[in-house]
Image (tube, rainbow, N blue to C red; front, side, top):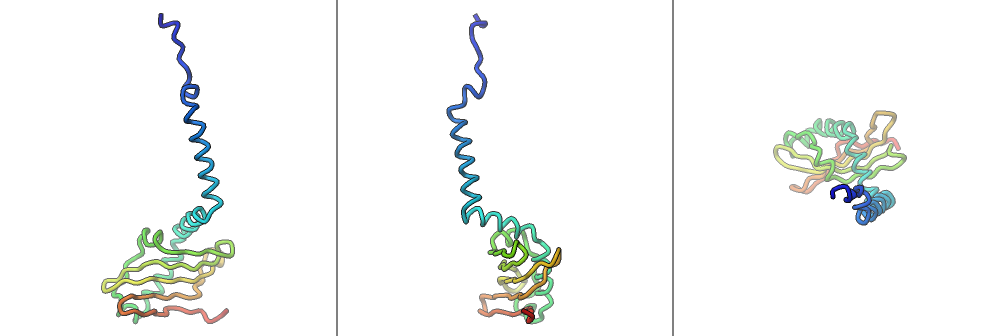
Length: 146
């Protein structure tokens, strides 16, 4: 009697939900690749991979005596700070304006970076730190050549 039962393939049994699922997946990929949401994901991924950009700017900021007095010892950037920050790339990802949070032993702030890439090296055009309490902006670096 078992010889009469035919086992159908997985695809034959599941095609009714598998085909629409593939179509939704392909539409989602298309939508992400052609919208601002997809653009934001790509920008965040590129920013996350540019550790040297943030590390270099943070090292320059740590040298500011005024900043040390207000923030105290500045902690290294954590990966979440980069993901939470805002980043705008232009010029084929060779020019960037970005803002990330930084933490000090006394206070916190936002590190604003404007930079251009020359090969593998980032040249900083401007680095500012914005502090809420007391509300002020500290100019750490400004490249006057433009």
